[in-house]
Every structure is written in C-alpha cells, then in structure tokens.
Image 1 (spheres, rainbow, N blue to C red):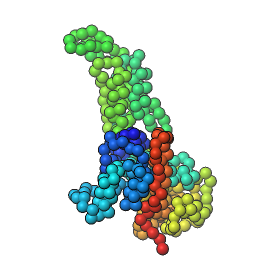
Image 2: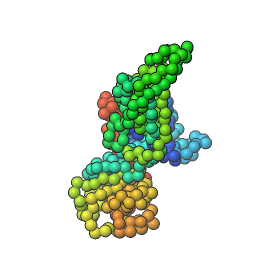
Image 3: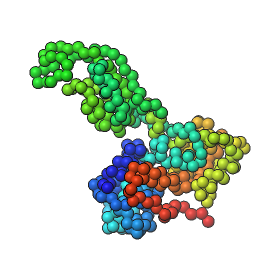
Image 4: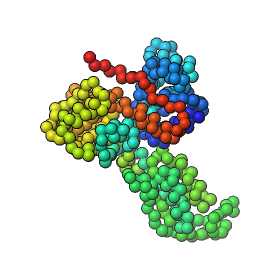
Length: 364
C-alpha cells in the first residue's frame, strides 16, 4: 500500500496540527507515494533500529520520537542522526514520526498507560484552546436535516462525549438572483424571501476543508452563505497529560511498587510519601514537570511522569506524590498503541513491533 494511506490512518487519531510548536512530527524521510511492504514500530530511531528494519525487510519505520528535531545543514555522517539518515536512504527506508500530536489526544500515549494502571473516567489534564471554530450557515427549512447530517458526518458538532450538537433558529433569508445565475428558488431579478434555518455548530480547525466540502455538497443553493468564527474554548479531548481514578483506593507504597512493575522500571524516583491511600492519578508520558501545578490543582493524589528535576520535587509540598518512572518507561507502550491502530485498519499488512530496547538511560 502507499505510505500516505498509513499516515492518514495515524493522523485521523493524532492530526499533525495537534503537535507542539517545537516538535517535528510527520513524514521525515521518503515520499508519501512510496509503496510500503512492511513497517517497523519503535519508540526511538537508532542505528540498531535501522539494522533491525533491514534484517526484517521493513521499508518504513514508524517512531514516536522524531529523529530530526532541528534543521540539518549537511549529511556527512559525522553525527548519529546523519549516520542513521544516510543508512536509511541507502536502504530505501522511509521514516515517519508521531510525537506530541499523539501525546495530546485523549486516546493517545497517556491513555494507554492509564489503562494498564487501571484508571477510569479519563480526562485531559490540561486541555488546549484555540483549536476550535464555529460554523454558522443558513439553508431552506426543508433541507436543514440533510445539511446538518452532512457536516456532522464530516466531523462537526462534537462537544466532549456528545455528538451532533447544534443550535437552530428560524428566520427569513433574502436574495435577488441576477441574469447569470440558476437559483434553487425565486425568480431572476426579483427580490425573494425564503424561510430558512440558521444552523450553528462547533468543529476542530483541522477539519475545516472536509466540513466545508460536506456543507457545499449537501446544500441546495448555488451560492452558500456561511460564517466561520475562531473560538477560545478549551478542546476537552486535546491537550497535555491525563487524569483518572482507580476503581478502589490503594496504599501509596503498594501503588508505586505496582507502577514500577507495570513499567518494568529499574528505578522509581518520587517525592515524600504523604501517608494516605491514593485514588486520583495524573499522568504525563515523557517530560511532564510543567504539569505538576495542574495535577495539584486537580486534586490528584499521585502525578506520574519522567525527567522530573530535583527542585520540582519540592512542589509536592505534602499535597501530592510526584513519581518519576523514567522517560522511556512512561512512553514505551506507544508502540502497542500504534500497532493496534494500524492492524485494525490494515489487518493483512506486515506490521512489526521492534524488539530492540532503545532506552538510552542505564542504571548500575
């Protein structure tokens, strides 16, 4: 199949517009029209991963962490990034990365760790704003249902766990058709008034073209009137971190030991225990110290992440237990997540999870 079919499947869950400004998710090497015979899923891309892809005859590597974060001025093989790229090019291997865009969705990196821990009632810890817009359009009353259904199917009208959300009000539209028109109703060169319904609905910005195409296809008018307004509303299902609850509260020591076992962590750093059972848990895979205050404000009992700096542990202040399980350890399950997404869509595709441990941190 073509590479663009695979990337489309991933980006339906994690649109590239959801990635952070510093990130470099997407197709890093290769053409979207390249025919992919087999793909290898990994957390990081190392020279060992390229060797594994060659050995397993995979001509696509799908990674969580991008190999290229900043611009390259040369490919001379003097750095590990340059060596990896040269080897991938020589062996005709494409590289695609899905990083903070899959961190930032409700069913992404954090949710799979939350599921393994046994959390329920999952919510984004720090929702993003500026990713939503409002569509307002007007159509004849008899066609309102068709138009609504079309834009809903294209991705509009979702608010939290509710779908098909819209506001509708009756009114009269007016227009005068000129000689070079073919009006659906009314006569040429005569002012016409039509009973219409004003439809208002919300939609994510990255769905704009799909929703407008659906609107124009479903609407009976030759010229469709519509307005799009930017919104500052929080996007409940997109943002940093996740928070949920255990089915039953646990002793904090028992819980920390269980997390260590689930994540196969050789070491677990944490702030002072607060001598109570824990139930409400916040998570941020990777580097999540920027969410400590959000976790405390959300009344979480434990905040699980990686790369916590020494001084950040003081923020716990007997209000929360901050647990650093390691960057790799907190994100390792993204490989399983990507595999499950792709194999469900393409059940006969040759898809493999890397067997190479790419963790760059060792404990002695």
